[in-house]
Length: 279
Picture 1 (tube, helix red, strand yellow):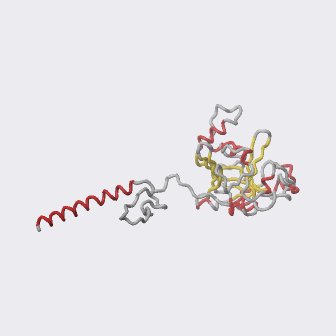
Picture 2 (tube, helix red, strand yellow; picture 1 turned 30 degrees about the horizontal axis):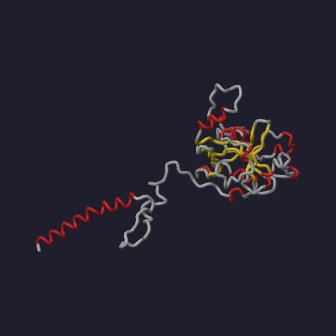
Picture 3 (cartoon, helix red, strand yellow; picture 1 turned 30 degrees about the vertical axis):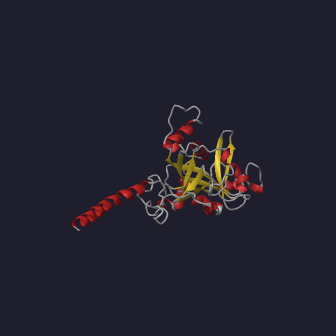
């Protein structure tokens, strides 16, 4: 009897030593590769081994989910203001992601707006994106050398021009992309503030060209919009006259350009409009 009890004790000790090893072996198996024995019930891989949502398993570079179609489905004026503080993301062919916070926009209201490319309700192959569903990109070529990017809103022919970004991620790549388009100043490195401080500059910095015309900003894999930090989603906004549309008569003075007050990344600051807003 003493010998038998000693044997049983040894077996129990051995089993306890094997249990951690067995658990360790199980956890090392890749993604559900554990195969139950004929006597072992098949319960599938335990779902608690690798939590789906945990700060311990989250990447330090994780980003919020993209904004969907509902965000873009609003009138031009409200969408132009809603864009402020949101983050535009551009993924290059090599996987590099460039990010910039939107700090300046302009609203174009459609057929009634004498400054809009859709004035009078005219539709052409060039401006078709303005008449497509909200969130569609309208990218056009100006002066034979520059691109500008717009996003359609509610209302036929209405859209938002993205005018300036605050660079957040991929600044060196932006600098290289901008430098390829510069003439006469190739020897001087661009300051951060110069990277995206204008509608054509931000297109250069993010490698956006006519190939992006009519793409869906809610679905595209190379460009999308992410929500900005909560504290920047309702910034102090200045409403000022749009830039470079002197030909549009009374529409040239309408306060349809919006920018984040105090942002050093804005392309053109309107002191008069800022003082009027504070009065």
